[in-house]
Image (cartoon, rainbow, N blue to C red; front, side, top):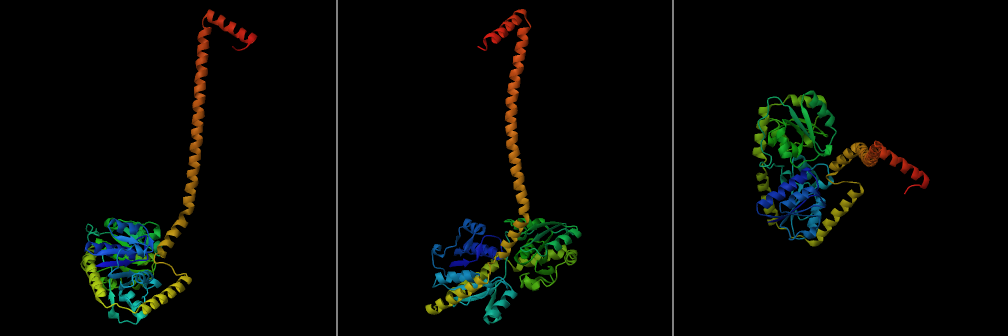
Length: 422
């Protein structure tokens, strides 16, 4: 099958970008022809290209008409469906807040999907559809990549904070310090994103994270405290596992205020054996292979469904969507990775003074190096002249040491006074 996947960006490590990478890579490995369309391209696009997958920000570069368009973000999906006028699509809602994760009212969108129950509730509210008509397409983990770590110690020592926002960061830092944990930090909130998270996770006993990052940490075998700038859920345990998973360990479970005391209390509930059971469970219910099975079934269903649409109706729906998009644009609405970009900008602004100071110090160092180099050259010249003068004095002393030499020196001196230099 020929599948075109859309996403608003492939520049960083946001949840939908990782989903797009896993989806496109997995489908290609299963023998499908896959292309990805995203208006904003960067390092994540390069990952897919290295795997032989077509990635483009221009729809005309897709060399075939897709059998199905697998859409993340309604505005990008709408663009792809407008270009490929005979292709049906499905839409996946990734958030309850962003407008471009709202249901696209387009006649060729044959299936609506949601990554968790909160997103499914949003689609039900926006479309009036039955809850059962919205497919739950939950996040999954590549179990080969996120392999299990060694068994957890009885007492935790090392912790990792994974964050895209930063309101909770001071509380987590204070709690980790009070609990005697060595804390490292990764994520756009700190201006530090990594491509080897699957390897780094094996070095930590406790991870503070939400959503997909929390699931990946659980799959590796870390104990996970579900928390971010929006609130605190608590330590993920076998008792909370299923209820939190269908909510994607996300916004709808972050019901508590984030304080250092509350986070420290969750650290105190650390249980190595229970964390191991959580890991075994998530690896059992959330493998990427099962996710791809579900996606393939959806694609077959969408491709087989009648999708002949009155072209006037199709064009009118596209026009209404564009009009809505323009209104949103006028309201200053922003792309999915805005939090990432804003955090990066804040990090840069916070450290700009240091950067500027370092640049100034480098300039001073370079100027001093240049001055020292000039001084060294001048010193070398002086040393040569001094050595020459010393040698002349030595030669003169040797001449004066003999009577004949002294006489010749006096005669030469008289000649110079009388007639000047030769």
